[in-house]
Length: 311
Image (tube, rainbow, N blue to C red; front, side, top):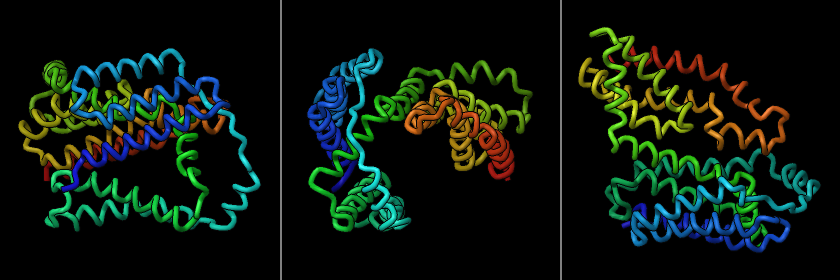
């Protein structure tokens, strides 16, 4: 039965390939740092429970040291602009079809695979997502016929361009789980609850949605803020206290957190890395543009939660 271990093995193999290819990139003066960083990522995914909490903890600390000391860099591989433009003109928008395969397979697999006995029903969505990536990759190999290792080299060049920020989402998501286990949500709830008027539903909804956005701006990731704010306000006040439907409360709460993601440099992988890759003069230019979208969406999320969760 296919479960998360298969996805971890696949992801670990990909990072191992990036580490080996990065070590061969002599145009990168920091190629040893890159190889060490992605090699440790591969070890964590491939080793999993076998290297234990202490081993994984040492890996995380080492990754932080490598990133913090500027041990990662980029190569200066020559790019054939004319070939890229010719390739884009030949296939046009059909190139996006490969990307659409991934969500399509994930959606179909989520509904079709449970009950087949092939996939762990508890992890069917994640397994379907990974299956979508594999199928999209296979389609691209057959359709576009790249040179040997060209796909991996392209992926390795992109991950080197993104750098340590590529590991930020899963690290911050893990931080949210640590906060939840440490009882941070209970502490935050104890601070906020006395300030809310008793039975004031709209005030509690605003405290949750705005709190999700604000805490996400501090932590840089809605997955890290969600367990804290949901344990502080979402479940004890909105669901248990006021009788809200947990499905819209949690769904709209997470969407409110994503509004915070749009407005913070802490979400470096979303807001700072693109500005760097696009060589924008203003490294906060992406955030400045996104704020005027995030604030109205946050207001709409708040109104929808007040309506849908308490019908």
